[in-house]
Structure formats: C-alpha cells, structure tokens
Length: 336
Ligand SMILES: C[S@@+](CC[C@H](N)C(=O)[O-])C[C@H]1O[C@@H](n2cnc3c(N)ncnc32)[C@H](O)[C@@H]1O
Image 1: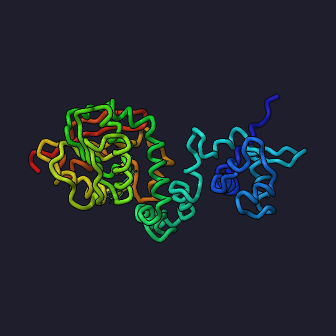
Image 2: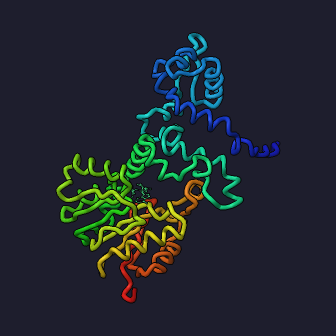
Image 3: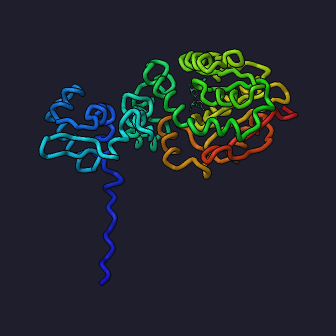
C-alpha cells in the first residue's frame, strides 16, 4: 500500500545549534585534541581550556549528528569520518572556513546580521565588527595569514590550470592587481618563462608575496608592491590581471578599479579578469555571502563586460579557464 509522502521539515535548513556546534568544535580543535584514540570530555576540556560540563553537552550533540562517536565503555569521544574533516590537515580544507578565529569562519558569523542587510543593502561585516573585511585583515595578522592560506587552498588545483589555459606568454610584463601573496602569478611565471610580473596588494599581503616569490626562486622575474588599487597603479605594463577582485566590490568601486587599470595601461595593453561568473560556477550561496560580507555580487559575463566597456575598455574575448572560472580580456578602447 502506498504510504503518504512524509512532509519535508524546514527545520534542518534553519537550525543554528548544529552549524554553531560544528564551528565551535573546529575552533577548539576538538578533532585534533581527540586524536585517533579518542579522549574523555574531561580530557578534551582540559586540552581545549573549556568547561567540562558545557563541553560534554556540545560533544553529545556532535555525537547525535554523527560528527563524533562515543564509546560507552571508556567514555571516549572520537571524530567520525565526517568529524575528521575538522582536522587542520584534512584534505577537504574545511577548518579555516569553520574556525571562527580564522578570516573565513569569522566572516561567516556576520550572517546573523542578514536581516539588516535586507533592510538597507549595506554589508553585514562592518556592522558586526566595526570595520570592513580588508581593514580587519590589515589589523589582525592571523586573519590575513588565514585568508591568504584559504586563497591558496582554493587555487591549489585551479592556478596551474589558469596559467596553462590562457596565453599569458603574449604579455612580457604583468601587474597582478590585488594579487594576494601570489598564488596565481607564481604559477603563470612557472608556466611562461618569458613573463615578468609585479604583485600589487595591501602591505601585509605584499610582504607575504615578496617572501613567497623569493622562496619560489622567482624574485629575479617578479616583485611585490605594497599599495591600494584605488591609487595610481604601476604604469606601462602589458597586462593588468584582476583575479577574483571585482566580485568583492559593488559596481561603483569595481568601476574605480577598472578605470585605474585603464589609466595605467599602455595603449594596446590588456586588462584580464579571472572571475567565477554567475551561471557558470558562481552559486547563489557564494553570491549571498558576497552581498553579506562586502555588499558586492557575482556577475554574469555580460554584466562584467558592460562594467568594463563603461570604463573605456574594449572587449577582446571571454572563455572558461577552469570548471569554475572564466577569463575575460579587454583592452583600452581606441576612443578613450
Ligand atoms: C579575493 S582576494 C584575491 C587574491 C588573488 N588575486 C587571487 O586570486 O588569489 C582579493 C585581494 O584583494 C586585495 N585587496 C583588497 N583591497 C585592496 C586594495 N584597496 N588595494 C589592493 N589590494 C586590495 C586583498 O588583500 C586580497 O588579496
């Protein structure tokens, strides 16, 4: 006999107890503290500097949602296969996105201000933390280093593909505008020995980029410049690269960045955007995060093109360079 289909509950989508329990477990390093042999609640409390009575309640919920398991005989909690993803060295790279003392985990917590974002459209991050995301990273070294590590992790497979799947060898001198600590430019230089480059980013990122270029043995072909892309950029390069930059900014700021590239560029130089584009890799969750954190958005190829051509750039072409990202190439328009 046919059973009536069970009605789906909205609550699993909305419950905050479980996501917060998982994030706090990541922040306290419970999976690392438990190790493979497991540990009692008292041991985990002493290793993580927490209240044993409170921690036991957290652990019991993590057992209920199958992130930890409890062995009744010895009272030890161990991470399950799922819980093992909370470890710092887990291949899934989830920890910095969940640990609320890391840039990614901290930014996600600003989602509690989402209602106010809907009311006035202004980003939640400054509302919650008193300064915008980039100023916060400049002020707190741990936030900067965890953000750069997150950027490197997300590009560990993509950067070599982007370096290979686009002909960078046409540009002997590239300025990587907002290049972070250099994950993409380093791969471009490795793949194209005739290319030289400069990474322009805020002072802490530029300092880290200089160190990485040296460690990679590329400091004879590349350097790092500390500065803001809202100020005049190094002039006369053959290409200005903007990788995952415009989606961090609203249209007004994105236009200022593009106009700065146009002003610095030689007449036939290229401005190359590498972006996850809406409809091809940029999903609704990341788009909502961009609105919440930065007041920005993921754009379609057409929206990016319209933005660039409105700044005196001429469209040369657009093509996917990885499963999640496109390259859009522009040059300085003849009439600008
Ligand atoms: C999403 S990350 C992308 C980093 C790098 N392009 C990549 O694809 O891995 C954005 C970068 O923009 C930099 N940034 C933010 N505001 C900036 C500014 N005013 N001037 C220069 N760089 C800035 C950040 O420090 C960060 O490294």
